[in-house]
Length: 210
Image (cartoon, rainbow, N blue to C red; front, side):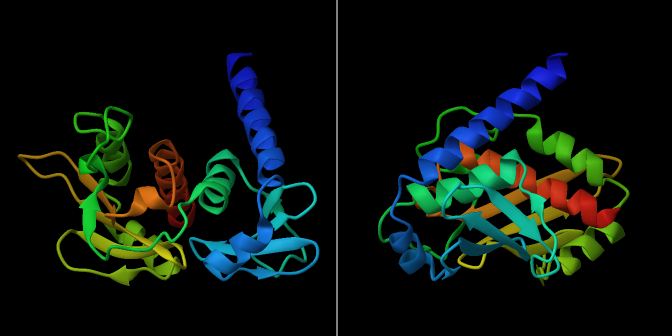
């Protein structure tokens, strides 16, 4: 019952945000991010997957077959897309300087702060599966980097990259996962939304790993 209620609450928040989306200037979104559009939908790519947002209902869906069929976006991916399109700062742009999400300046507390077990738990999920993680990153058209047993630059959005860097455990240290983002990431989304975005990235990785 508790899980069902939680799921229902997430669905309600997602539906509420769809209504909020409809209050924003869609033409400004199109111009700001160079979105493809038609009278019915705005289109955006997230982690190399095609999404579209209904211009009349705000519903977010995705497809891997040019929308001959489609799936409804889940909470994390939908809320990330809504936040970037609706709340990104005017004139947002990359600093082209990478920072660890756990060291973002001005951030106080939260699931991604130093000392949180979020990344420790995520790293443990990939431990012993580096080859599968590498294949998953390459399926998502990641750019291979140095430093780490698996290190790739991924495009969360075409205009917003992030880096995933992973080390296997050894006799002295547990498995370690780092997520690096552009220093100006909070010009594009709220800090709380970054948690949704990273959770979505990790879920996609696990899906691609099978």
